[in-house]
Image (cartoon, rainbow, N blue to C red; front, top):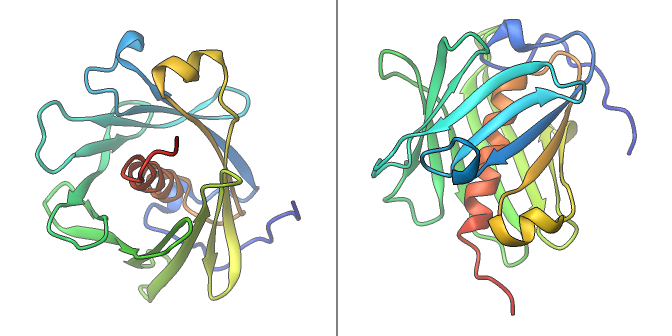
Length: 200
């Protein structure tokens, strides 16, 4: 895969998460046997194991609420499932209940298509990102104005995943792009995949 070019001005909602160098996130879904009460938690680190942020699902939440926080536990935003949407969609909500971003699902015969809408923190301009995923080769790309800003890959099923159905994703993020937002987009992709009819 070609190296992702830097993005300027920084792109995202949380400027401290816009790293000047490309970073690959390792997002490991935690099952019930690994301390998750919901089975919807993700441990999010870089490839060296340094914590980047955390995603925790809320027990018995109708909206499928997931809370993202920094490594110290400070809440960044909550991700909510828009149950009334025709195609699975999500809202990112701030501490005061304000909508920070939305992920709109679009129907696609093969794979997954979504658009991500938010106001860029670095210049207050409206932004639309495009997400296209391919279930067959376990990959997805996030683009901005046709330019790739992140790529998502899934590790091939190992022995443990055969029984737990938990996934590990690797998200490579371009320099200057919000790591926390890209992690949230990956979780949305995982949720949409879980809604796909299983083969076999």
